[in-house]
Length: 67
Image 1: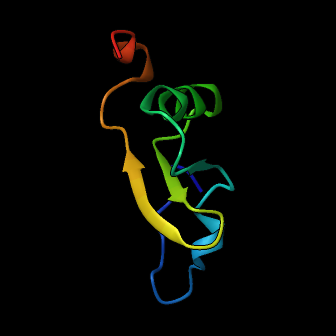
Image 2: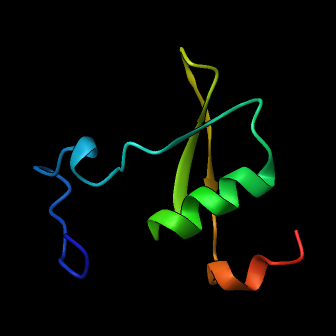
């Protein structure tokens, strides 16, 4: 789907979200590493029951070496 235009009325959320999640107990460094290794820009934060939020990375993963 990368680079394709999505049709919001028929696109299912699960088709554009990866299965990658970060525990609410996880660190920022763990989240950045998860995004770098999997070449993704967004991960869900969960308490293993509910989605608590979404972490989004705007810059290139290699730029975050100081965190």
